[in-house]
View 1 (spheres, rainbow, N blue to C red):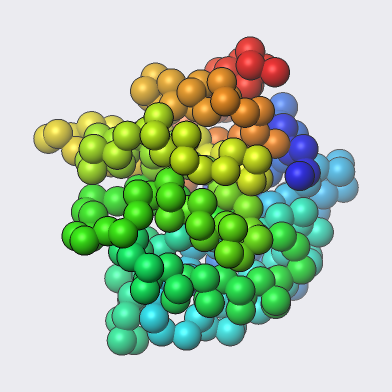
View 2: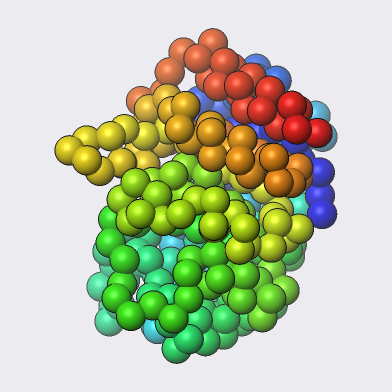
Length: 267
C-alpha cells in the first residue's frame, strides 16, 4: 500500500494556498481537471514530487445503466497526466434511465445490487492505469430490506473486486447521525488492511440532520471518528477535503495539523 501521509484536496480556487501548505500529497477531482494542458499549479506540485491522487464523482458504479466509457477515459487520462498512484470513486449511483440526480445516491445493500456493483467495478478497473479505491458515502436515506450492513457490504465488495477502500470518516459520522449507523461496528467489519486512504471533511447540524457540506470546519465529532479509526490501524493517507466557502490559509493549516496530530499519536 502506498504511504501517502497527510494531504489536502487540490482545487483551482485555492491552488496557491495548496502550494503553500505543508502536505504530503494532494487529491484532484478528475471531472474538474483538464489534461491538455494540465493546470500549472498541478505541474508545480508534481515537480516537487508530491503524489497526486485522481478522485472521481460521476462514474455511477452502483447504477444499472452502463458506466459511461467517456467518463472512465477522462479519469484514466487525468490519472496518467498526474502519474496518480491511486484513483478513487464512490460506492454510489448518480441516476437511472438517462436521468442524472446531480447527487451521490446510496446503493441498496442487497445481494442483487452488490452483483451489479461488482460487475461495474471489475469492468472499470480494466481501463484505469492505477489501483482503484472505493469510498463510503453520506446518505440521508437508507433502502429497506438490506441483506448486509454497510461494513459487511464494503468488505464483500473489496473481496470480490480486489479493490481498496477510501474511508470517509465524515460520511461515516453523518450516517451515524442520520441513519443510526454504528460507527464502531462499521470499523470492526471493514477490512482495515485494505484502506488506501481516508477522507476528512466539515459539515453542520441542522434540524437534527448532519449535512456533510465540505464548506465548514471539521467538527470534533468527525475528528473523534478519525481517532477511532487510527486506534485500529495506521491509514496510509489522510486527506482534508474542502469544496466551498474556503477559509483563511491559517485555518486550513490548523485543520491539517489537528489531523496529523491524531494520526501520529497512534503510530
